[in-house]
Image (cartoon, one colour):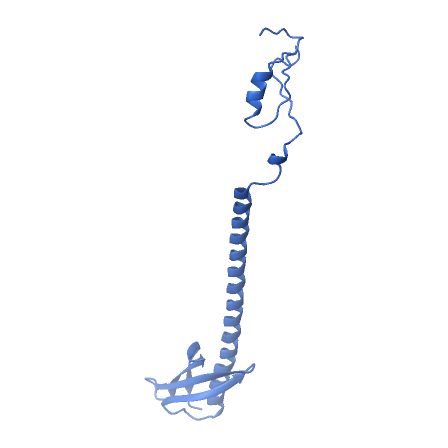
Length: 164
């Protein structure tokens, strides 16, 4: 088929074969002086079979959304756990400070050994174990206050108490 610059070439069989790959092309190739290359016009018509998403596309999108939601739930759980741990550590610090202040206010050198004190803070009952040890200087004693909540240690504070 021979074409000059002014006449539109109609090779419908070639265009039908080419249009099956990606888009529906209008079966006209235009050759003009201003545009020496082949121009294809895209059709806006779509078949009913080509509308919507395929099952694989939907499944991939659902998998991506599920992964994002699982990551969000995990982060949320981690933040909740860390907030609870911080709250427990703060309450344990208050209990340990109260037990050590009580030892200092007694104004006598504490006896060597282990003493258990119960402490209630924010409707939680915590157990404080005060362990008193000797030091090389007989005027001082080392005191370890370890706070337990539900049989696991939460906090440990060590200080030195002197003779008053």
